[in-house]
Amino acid sequence: MNRRNNGPSFEPIPLRTEYRCNGHRGHVFEAEPETSRDHGIRIAPTPAPSSGVVMRLLVLALTLVASTSIHALTYTSRVEQVPLVELYTSQGCSSCPPADRWLSRLKSHPGLWRELVPLAFHVDYWDHIGWEDPFADPRNSARQGEYRNHGRVGSVYTPGFVIGGREWKGFFRGGQLSLPPTPKVGRMRLELTGDSQARIEFEPMTSDIPEPLTLHIVRLGFGLTTEVARGENAGRELREDFVVLGWRSKEVDLAAGSWELPLPEPSGKPERQAVAAWLSASGSPVPLQAVAGWLP
Image 1 (spheres, rainbow, N blue to C red):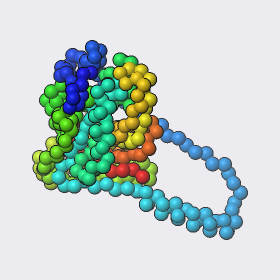
Image 2 (cartoon, rainbow, N blue to C red; image 1 turned 135 degrees about the vertical axis):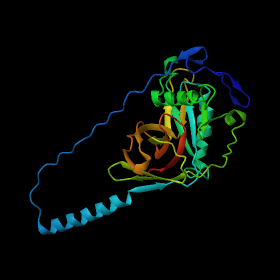
Image 3 (cartoon, rainbow, N blue to C red; image 1 turned 60 degrees about the vertical axis):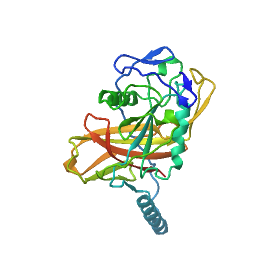
Image 4 (cartoon, rainbow, N blue to C red; image 1 turned 45 degrees about the vertical axis):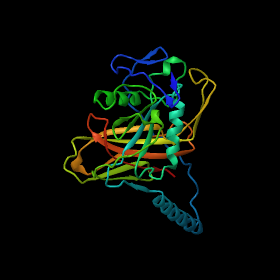
């Protein structure tokens, strides 16, 4: 891909025909449904313990209960809309590493999680040109395509930014991030329990909330390092943050007020992790409200 002095450049591409990168072509495919698997633990029988052992076990059990309650986490958004800062990227794109580094710098943003929620969606439509991105997911490509279908972005390309549901080209003009004021939409709360279940609540402050809604929850990975052996970034070591490692979603009824989803399982070996959840109108990628925070 070509570059300019002020950052990587791109060539607008019609969504419904093909994607191009240095003459190569790609297409978006629909995501396959996620599956999960439970793992059981078998404990061998032991002789009956003495009364002293029973007392020690009781103290240990109470300690574990207290520890579990401490690790139950709650994240709460502000009332004003919290915008998602979405980067559509690929390890197979030579113009993407500068954008990945720009997104990584948001780890030190004073408004992280409270005023903005960065997400790196790795797309799969460049996987065929020499390097298969280990974090690519067809759902990420499809989400970028939905923004194009809703007129929120002019074309599909990498690196591509969407902030607050609209295309942002500020990265190509120096990367100065300026977040405009957002409306008061309501408070969103995310609670994680010891069994990796997420309970999400939303208290709207406006009657303009569309129905039905789609609830999304993602697990984010930080400090992910990949040595790229082939493709446009061959020979480079890429270090990435805010990478979407797992993503679950379901349609919900606003009247219910609260919903539950299992926390997505991680992939890769992140140094640190975070969780993010957001609501959008059914059939639309545009976020209405979001909540996020670090995982212990």
